Image (cartoon, rainbow, N blue to C red; front, side, top):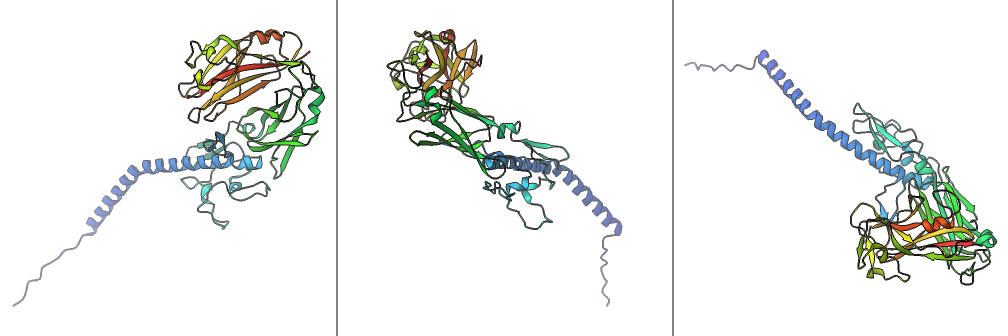
Length: 416
């Protein structure tokens, strides 16, 4: 008996074509659906890499130790901008180079394969021409990361100092040339440069064209060869001022009204009333100015403090001068502040001719510390101070977060 064979038909060509078309449509739809997410991921990847490249060039401002910035990147080490992004990984021949400044996990020695950190999320090379911006164009548009407003913000900053003896007397016309102040910084071509100046009679000395970074400062008493060495951190767009006291020297005897420096005396003036601003919160006193007017600091006995993340400031009227004659060499404003529990901010304030002027931003420790700002001339007129301006002067402080202020006063240095 014969068995009947079952007939098994396969897919026809038409059916296979239909399946392929359906799959193609599904793949196309899926790709179109996924493409925006892919582009978003590539955009975020590119933005993060651009930020890391910017940090490599100009440093990460969020890296702080002891209240001071510690990272200044390529510019901080070399005093110049890199000529290309490759300089961040490969030394371009600079003796001051201390890289690599960015991790390049996909670096290859093959000249035919471009290093990974040089390409954006779409595989296109970043655009950089030695300026203050890096640009990605792989998305079809532009994604730009700036790391400064101008190159001058990174390369041509200003720093100044006022030199005093241990009684806060300036050197005067006799001793000014016996003091040498120098700052050492990278010169932008692979070496180090040292600028040296002598202070003026009022102790003021300044340096211009300084790049960002941590630089060495030397103050030398040429008579005794005693040397003070310190570090100064120059942030972008800085106009930094610092007072420096030299121990074991006495340039003037303020108690007797005369001295070798030619400075006849120093008059100290303290708050005696409210000024044009009372934004700080008082503690244990009826008005703000009474919290900060004491001759001897009472620390947390009476003080004013900040209350939030925004800057708040007080200004106080001060006593009229009892001197009123002679040439004013400089005006020095002092504040005694406590960082409370860390990462608080403070700065000096003065008001003259109806305008406010503030000192550099400070990060005081968690204990009361005295800071000062020196004005060799009136910041409003750029001329020597007058006694009527002293009588009209207001002094104070700006605080951020919960910093505390327990004292503020001004010292007027004058010559008859």
